[in-house]
Amino acid sequence: MAVFREVFLVLLLTAAAVVSKPNIVYVLTDDQDVKLGSLDALPVLKSLMTDQGLYFDNAFVTTPVCCPSRSSILTGKYTHNHHTYENTVERGCDAPSWRTLNENKTMGPYMSMAGYKTGFFGKYLNNYGEPGSGVDLSHIPPGWTRWFTLQGNSKYYNYSVSNQGVKESHGDNYTLDYFTDVIKAEAVKFIEESSDSPIFMYIATPAPHRPATPAPQYESRFVGQVAPRSPSYNFDSKDKHWIISEGTPVMTKEVIGLVDELYEMRLETLLSVQDLLEAVVGALEAIIWDSSNNRGKRDSPMRRISVFHLLCVVRG
Ligand SMILES: *[C@@H]1O[C@H](CO)[C@@H](O)[C@H](O)[C@H]1NC(C)=O
Ligand SMILES: *[C@@H]1O[C@H](CO)[C@@H](O)[C@H](O)[C@H]1NC(C)=O
Ligand SMILES: *[C@@H]1O[C@H](CO)[C@@H](O)[C@H](O)[C@H]1NC(C)=O
Image: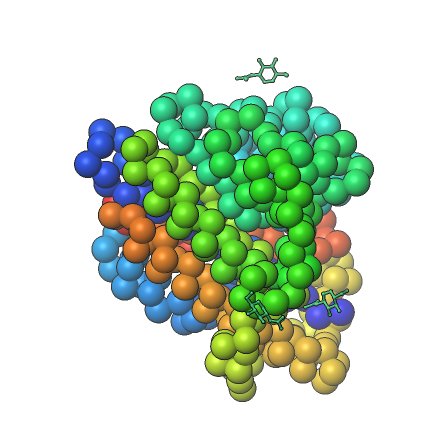
């Protein structure tokens, strides 16, 4: 199967409020890749953020795998310290050990202790609320005042969330259920209802991760856009180290078609992320943005030793 190099994008927004503490909003997209041109789908990123802040040209993550990286983002710890090694409960992802070791030492509790009203919106850890994790959706990790969190891994429709510890199930009616828009509405509501205290928000969209289901109005916005044919595109790496050569067989015509289709859909899902950003920015006064990256290819020991380049922008 083709390997689509996958990267997260993280945004950090702060509003310079009139109160002494600035509001801080951290936005994390799932699997967004800077090098594949995904920023072209987000022109407001430039106008709202980069043009008015900082662009970090050399930002990196240490463990480019979904749950380990999320655990590092939340705790500030390396993988060998937070003990989330893979995306499975067995390998630490939202496992009981996460709760005893880390869960009350994430951004949420610390920001709460620092006097912030905290809110979590979107994807937490890949197994949150799943059978096997040891907790269900009634579990709200310590330190979060508002908890609106996806059960399990990335979805756009037909998902459940923990809405303040109560399971809320969604179907596939765009108006009611499209997850990026649902997060947007909840995040804006939180900002509007929190004018009396400084806020810290963590907003994490499943977009543009697979299944990469675009909103209906954006469905054919990037028709014909194909994955960049860079020098490394579909490179025959048979003569390379086994880690590379065994993991990346040359793609068939059919796989190339699937990759290009996924590429288009991923960009289209980012148009809803752009809507979310505009709405959140509109609800705040000023912003910091940071972006991060994430994951290399699956099933390769490479990911354990890789450091991946990421995008980082800050506006204050
Ligand atoms: C975190 O949880 C552990 C285990 O329940 C507890 O001993 C510790 O006091 C907690 N720390 C904070 C800061 O809440
Ligand atoms: C959502 O679930 C329903 C019922 O199982 C199914 O018919 C529908 O195709 C699903 N929608 C999506 C977008 O997956
Ligand atoms: C989706 O929900 C909206 C708002 O409740 C409703 O007006 C619309 O009829 C629903 N669409 C479908 C296909 O059920």
